[in-house]
Image 1 (cartoon, rainbow, N blue to C red):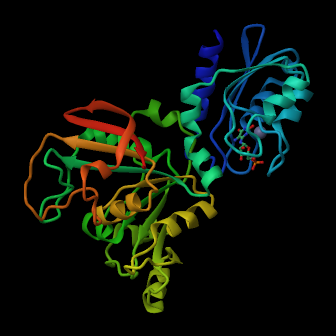
Image 2 (image 1 turned 180 degrees about the horizontal axis):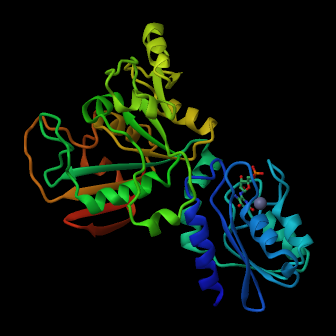
Image 3 (image 1 turned 30 degrees about the horizontal axis):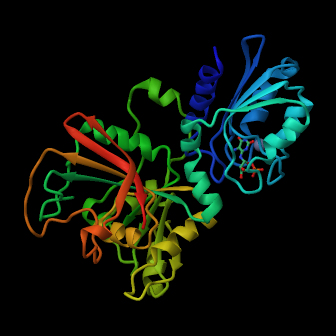
Length: 374
Ligand code: AOF
Ligand code: ZN
C-alpha cells in the first residue's frame, strides 16, 4: 500500500467515529512496519485516548522504526490527555505521514515542528478529505460556535410542505437514507417549535438495516435533539416529549418564557435552557448556538423550518447547505418555502454557495455547497 492508500484506511477509521468524539475532532491512525499494518486506532469517546495512542498501543513493540499515518497533525499540548507527540517520540516512530494540520491554534503546525526537531521524517499530504473531516471542529475551535449544516427537502416549485402542512414525503427513500446517515454523524439536530408541532418528528438517526453500514459505526446514544421554542409552548403529544426521547432532548426557550411553561416542560424530562431574545422577541439563534458550543457540541444539523433557517442565514451562521429537490409540484401561495425571514431585496445580495456539487439520489437531486457571506 502506498501513502495515500494507507491514509485512506486512516480516514475510514476516522469516519466511523464521526459524531462520537466532540468536543474533539474525529481522527484515524495506522501504524505500518515493514509494509505490514501492525496497529490501528481512532479517537476514543470523550475523554479517552487520541487515535495515535490507540494505534501505538495496538502495535506494541512493533512501533520501533515504524511509520505512523494520522489523518490529523498529532497534538503537542495537554488539554485532557498528554501530548501525542511525546508518545510518538517514546514509541520510536521513524516516519510520520499526516493528512492535514490541526486547526486548533494551540497546535497549528507546532506538533509537526516538534517531531521534525526529533529527526522524525514528517510528511503532510494536505488531504482535502482529511480537512473535510475536521471542518466542524475547525469552526468550533476558532469561532466558539458549532458548524451548521442546513438541510431541507423541497418540491420542484420550492415548497417544504403543502398548504395544509403535509410533508410526508417530499424526498424519496434514497435521499432519506442519506439524511439518516448524516444525522448519525452530527452532534445535534435543531428545529423550530412550528416544525416540531406540525411534523412531530423523532429526530433520531435510523441507519440502513444493511448490517455492513451499522457495523462500521461505533455505538452511541444518538444525536442531541434541540427545539427552539421562544414561548415554551409545545403540544403534549409530541414524540420528543415522550419518555423514550425526552432525556436526549433540549428545549431552548426565550429568557422571557413563562416559568409555568418551563416547569411543565421540565416535568416531561427534557432539559430547558433559556437564552436571550432578539429585538423581535424571538430566540437569538447565535446565542442558542453559542450555548451548544459551550456544552461541547461541534456540528449542528438544522432541519427547519423556514423561520429558523431565515434567522440562521440572517445571523450568518449557516456554513453548509444540503438541498434535496424532488420532481414534484404542489403549488399554493401559502405553502412554505425553505428560508423565511425578511429576505434579500436584490439578487446581487443573494447568499451564494461555493464549492457546490450536484448528485442524484433516486428521483431527487441534491445540491450542496458552502455558504459564501459577503
Ligand atoms: C490528536 N489525536 O485523536 C485528536 C486530536 O482534550 P484533549 O486532551 O483530548 O485534546 C483535544 C485536542 O487534541 C483537540 O483540541 C485537537 O487539537 C486535538 N485532537 N489530536 O493528536 C486525536 N482527536
Ligand atoms: Zn493527541
